[in-house]
Length: 228
Ligand code: CTP
Ligand code: CA
Image (cartoon, rainbow, N blue to C red):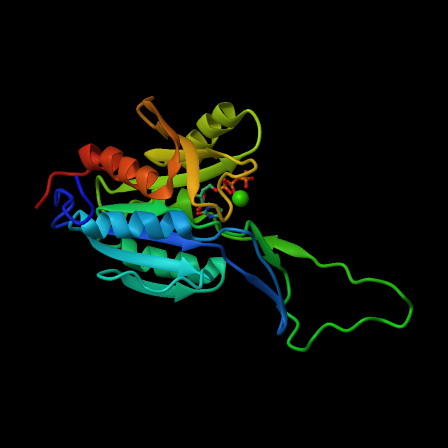
C-alpha cells in the first residue's frame, strides 16, 4: 500500500507511544541522559495515526516537531514520563514503551551549580532507582486486555536476554534490537526480533524504522481486545 492509503485497521482505538530519552537533572546546568533519538517512537506514532488510531505520544527530549494528527505530551524526566504515560494509558487499547527511560536519577538535585573544589577532588554522585514504567503498566493493566509493548536494546546474547526481559517485565510483546554500528542510536534503520508472551518470535529484517513500526502494529492488532 502506498503511504497515506493504509487500511484504517486501528480506527476507534486509542494507542499511547513513548519516545525519546529521559534526562535526569543533577543541577541547573547538567543532567544524566542517553542517546535515544526518538525516531522509532515517532515512526510508531505516525504509523498508528495513518492506520486510524487516536495517538498520544509522550516524548522526552527529542526536539522532533509534532507529527500531524497526534496528541503530543512533552516531558523531561522518568518520573514525569511515568505520570504522563499512566494518565494517557487509562483508556488506551495499547501502550508502546519505545522511550529510553533512565534506570537511575541523582539522589539529590543541587539547586545551585555544582562547583569545583580547590583541593582538586571530584564529587561523588549518588543515584537512586527510577520506577520501572513498563513493568508497572504490565502488572496493573488500566483496562482488561490492554496490550503492552516494550523495547530492549542488547549487545550480546540478544535473544536470551530478550526472552528473560520479556518474562521479567510481563509485557505482551518485546521488540529486541541488537545494538551495533549503524544500528539503533540515531540511525534511520533498525533490525529486530519481536518476542511475544505466547512464544511467537518475529524477525524483522534490517530496514527503515517505519517498516518496524508497521510490523509492531501488525502484531498488536490481533492481540487487541474486541472493539467496542
Ligand atoms: N523501561 C521503563 N522504565 C524504566 C526502564 C525501562 O518503562 N525505568 C522500559 C523501556 O521503555 C523499554 C523496556 O523497559 O521499553 C526495556 O528497557 P531496558 O532498559 O532494556 O530494560 P531494563 O529493565 O532497564 O534492563 P537493563 O538493566 O538491561 O537496562
Ligand atoms: Ca534500562
